[in-house]
Length: 293
Image (spheres, rainbow, N blue to C red):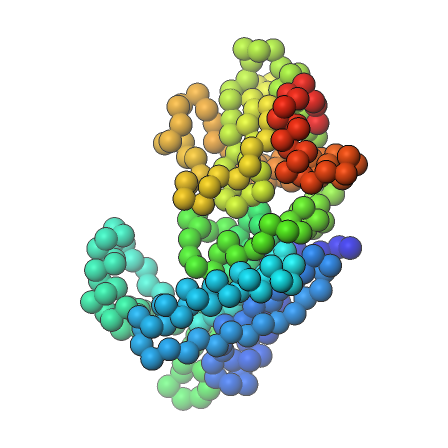
């Protein structure tokens, strides 16, 4: 089974949102979800509450409900579209919180607000976002502007992220588009390097199923793996260069994602061959450091 790229999910839900907006002049939050079997379906989740504060509480409950729904359906990827207000704020978090409260807990009252449709997509290893402006001409029907750049956000936060269940992630990761055996990096073990050679690294990919530690080969630039760790706890942020000693390199972005995918695939295949879950195999793997990918 070949899965379309994650950014294609955003484009697809963008077209669905445009059709609904053209027909109705507004859209309720739309979820395009994909199950482990590759089946896709649309879920619409209207948000109804009497006030901005009540809306916030309702959204928290809706996020919890969607998490349960995703688990029941074995969802491994999703893209979401929803109307919202946004502003370019240059305040520190505390100042913005006070300003937000003064506006009645909604950016709809902000003088430089921007009305948009926000698109978010997640597959357990990366998150993508994009926007389309809602244009309301003085004469004529409102419409959606062009889809903006699809980007990886610098900071990952919000109630609508991290909703995927862990069940089925292994299968989804093994079938991610544009990552076949010829494109994935070769897994090198740090035992290939002399003990005193290579800068220590740690990967920091938000919501990845594992993180990796090892050393970078100074001659080839390749990342040589010492071992795999489980994902960090939700209440502990991913490491950054400011959190670690200067001799440790924090590896992010596509380089880290491809290596994590390679190692996770290798771990999954080995686990299946031995009739184990990946968690059971990882426990065994940590007990036998001489095992080489």
